[in-house]
Amino acid sequence: MSFQLYIAKRYLRSKSTNNAINFITYIAVIGIVLGAASLFIVLSGFAGLKDFTLQFSNEIDPDLKAEATIGKSFVLTKNDISKLNGLEDVAVYSKVIEERVFISSQDKNTLATIKGVDAHFQNVVNIDSVIDYGSWLDQKSNQIVAGWGISNNLSFGVLDYTKAIKIYVPKPGKGQITSTKNAFNTVNAVNVGVFYINESLNDTYIFAPIDLAKNLLNYSPNQVSSVEFKLKEGVDEDIAKLNIQAILGDKVVLKNREQLNDALYKMLNTENLAVYLIFTLVLIIAFFNVIGSLIMMILDKKQSLSTLFNIGATVKDIRKIFFYQGSLMSIIGGLIGLGVALIITGLQKAFHLVMITPSLAYPVTIKLENLFIVFLTISVLGIIASKIAAVRITKNLVQNY
Image (tube, rainbow, N blue to C red):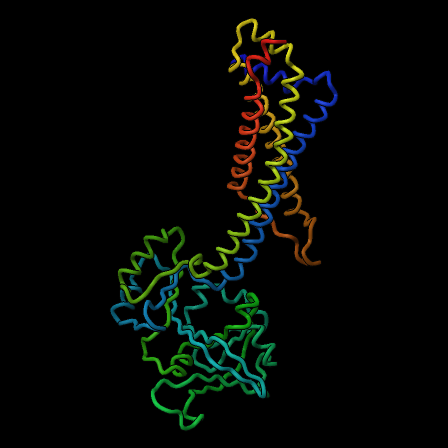
């Protein structure tokens, strides 16, 4: 151990004869502890909110989704289907048809997106977990499963045969429309279930059998809007994407869960960064106390520093003493703060101390990366603050005492 580090540790443990300096030092250490704890708690809170927000969309988002590169649909050839069935990376896939439709019930109507799915859809995503009441649809039927918002807006429930549900979509073609009757393809449907995911999806989607959507849109037998894939456990996503892309070619673009929800991910990541920067600014202000504490300590130890200088220590050696002292103060304070934060977040996870609603606790997620981020932030700021204070030591200061 170098003598600079040894003396720095002694100075860190010992009290000054000046109570004002001791008070300033205590304030500096408390500021570091509280700053580190607050930063980690806030980052854990945002990580919990992010996981809580994404868990709903992830329930109905596949591992990978192949969408048409041009237009709204593409054709799966028999050769494509044969090769997809032979892929070892894919556990199961589902053919999907999506389109905007007009849906009405009695005197009420709204725009919606119909999502026609085949029998494999339940194995690709965990759709059963979001069915609020009712059941999932049968393929050989005119059954639909509507979002909670659509069901509420049109005032229809589950298996409510007294309220007819009609789905309309404009017929493709050219020229003038001479009759509204010939302008739309129409199907009568029965709602058998209501799902609840989030406000946006609840107000937008209805699920239907793929044959119903195909007939409504006049699609050819193998014409689809997208193909959704569930990958096998442990499969490398990038390799799976390459294998699927090699089969389907340039007619599709493949997206994973993050790319399917890119706007949501960007919003959550931006908010997380903004909170980190705000709390880092608070920490920077707190580290001014560290600088002040070290400068006061330097002035208080002028006689001792002069003695060290006279017995052979250089100004650089003396600067290192206070640089080490400030760095140790910051690192130890940061570790204590992280310990306090881990206890608080652990108690929140175990005992739900803070509630959003009477039945929903504020979510927190303890992540190793946040521990490293907070510790690195505290360490870097502590080193900078210690360096600023240490350079105040000059030869005149230690020589002319």
